[in-house]
Length: 112
Length: 117
Image 1: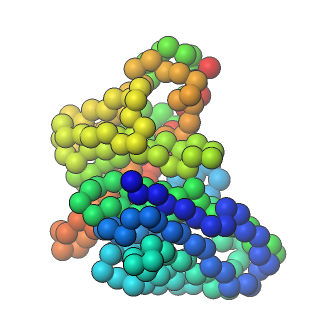
Image 2: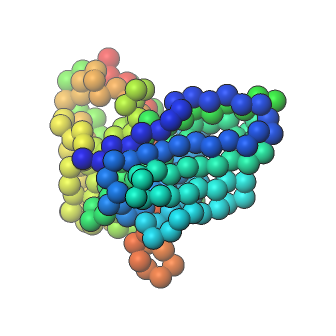
């Protein structure tokens, strides 16, 4: 059974700092991995999707990497801003299925 | 914008009453999902659908049923609501990419907050 873990559970950084959020998964037979952002009281917004054949994806100040063999993905946020404050979740879709399993998320607070 | 609408957005009900949540999509996506989100548990899959009248169970399906009689609507029913079903419920769709190949990328609705007293 796939299990997804996100560390740390919460993170507070000063504005301008570069930071890394971690996602680990137990079964490397994945179809894709997706990073989301969730603001309080809102739905999830898709940030980056990495297919199993890819090693990384970039969008603006965000870069996500995938290492299937070690069961890990990282989300790198460059030059953090107060507007980046939110909860970040990773979801893993298994090969051969249509279901995505989620980690519990990392709550990020960027101080001005 | 994946064109997902959930209704109702907020509902308060009493233990033992039936409740139906609706997810409506405007873009003819094949795959639709219902998740619940709770503090300490994250997002957990309840049921999903891979086509009209084709549904399957997720991790936490007990006490829930679903129906999909047309592509655009996916209904989640709590047959007899309990306090443990107080939660925020999210509908999601996954879509194919430009070449028609299923990417598995998920898009979410805004959520339905259900309180069972």
